[in-house]
Amino acid sequence: MDARLLDILVCPLCKGPLDYRKDKQDLVCKADRLAFPIRDGIPVMLEEEAAALSAEEADALR
Image 1 (cartoon, helix red, strand yellow):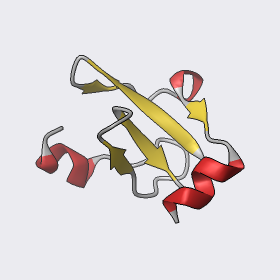
Image 2 (cartoon, rainbow, N blue to C red):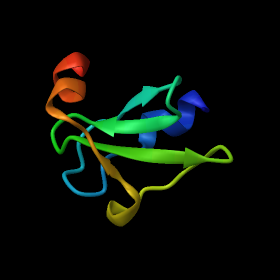
Image 3 (cartoon, rainbow, N blue to C red):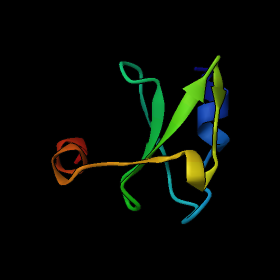
Image 4 (spheres, helix red, strand yellow):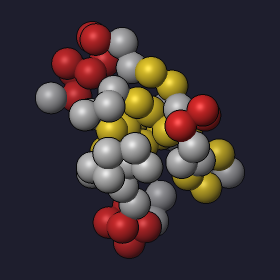
């Protein structure tokens, strides 16, 4: 994932920062507890494509 792209991407819902999880290939919004997938190197920033994080996953990111 390109670091310059990560610097400008924000959560489409709350406009908050995103964390990149290399192992799962997704971008996580801690505030909304959503993980946006990265497919073929392209972030999919659609709410309907995002996966809800479990409470345990969200707590692990803090």
